[in-house]
Amino acid sequence: MIHFNIDKIITSLKSSYGKDFLDTITMQLHKSIGAQFTFIAKLDAIRNVSQTMSLVAGDEFAENFEYSLEFTPCADVSDDSTCIFPSKICNLYPKDQLLIDMGIDGYIGAPLHDSKGAVFGLVVALYSKPIENAEEVASLFELFAGRISAELERAEKEHALFELNQSLEQKVASRTHELESALKQLKSSQKQLIEQEKLASLGRLVAGVAHEVNTPLGVAMLGNSTVLAGVNQLVKKLANNTLSKHDLDAFLIDAKEAGESVEFNLNRASELVVNFKQIATDFHTDPKSDVNLVEWISSISTSLKPMLKSAGIQFKLELPPYALIVNTYPSRLAQVVTNLVSNAIKHAFPKTHNQAEKVITIRLSGDATNYALEIADNGIGMDEDTQAHILDPFFTTDRKSGGMGLGMSIVHNLVTGSLNGRLVINSEQNKGTKVSVYFAGK
Image (cartoon, rainbow, N blue to C red; front, side):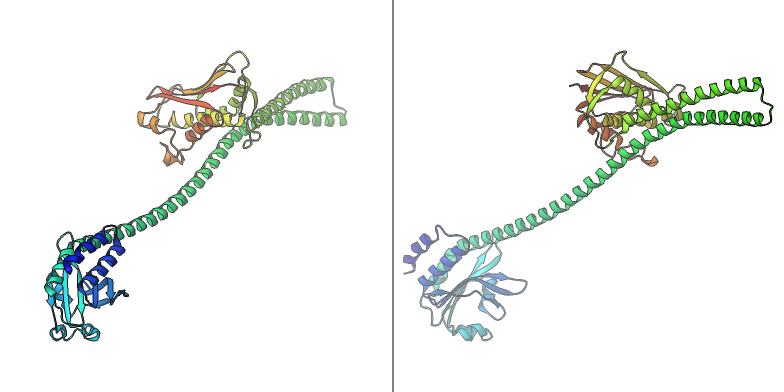
């Protein structure tokens, strides 16, 4: 009978896996051996318990349960022994209350081994009557034990892999969320720092213009005071009848000179304000417009001279003798020039470096189709490592003095972005640095 059922059992297992496999083989074994209860269980050696994975009672599957191995024949099976008790099992294990309550008389159990040879499960048949073919049933269990063990271990590893994948997915999702939050915060911080740097760039222009405007305004105020003082003297002498032709002539000469000085210096202040408006008006919106770069660079150089003068640096302009009109964003280009000149002042000529002649030169060349703007200095230059990282955000060689390392990064973003240009940096230690910006016109 058992030999007849082996082919049937094997055939039924061909396309089953996992829980389906366990249920199929448990049911087929149960029908073949004529037991009242047949189950496959997994052992928990640490807790000394067994958990059924598939249980058949009568002719139906029953709900799985967990039971203690203490005082049970299953404990002997877990010690790697095939146990056969054809009858009177309860007499041999009087403390196994479960067997007593179920009315079990015969017991057969075979161990299941994992790939390392350790017992990790068992297959058991329980009979309410004495077993007539106990040895054959045990042989059948041993025959299929390897296949059952392999499927249990495969399912266990598959479950472990599933849980690991779930855990990894959760960790990846959590980590991705953290990275996205950190990136969002970083972008926000970088945006704030860039805005600060933009305002600082504009501030340097304002400071330069304010310094330049103060001089002509001061001279104009002095000239006006001279004229007022002369008028007061004339009024006083006229009241005392002591006014002479000589006094009037002298006043007219002084008044004429003072008036000319006032007019010249007020015109100079007005010109400075106009230049500054050309550079900084609508600094953030910055509409694109046609600009004569020759005049524009001459204008912007006015606001840069105070910074250069205070640092003891000569400023040279090398501009073409013809008008070079291009369509660009003047405020953004002004920020590029201001940052490059400020960067040269700060880094090309450090206080620890003594140099007889310090020079920064702005050169303009080309035509409206292709033109180049160069800012060159004869300072200390840069080593290869500095050149390699000069455009990296937050890279600076002057962190102790409060440098943020955004100036050149902003220049690069402006040039290669909205200005649609190309930035080339050439530097040699102790010989200076030249930053070239190449543009293709409209």
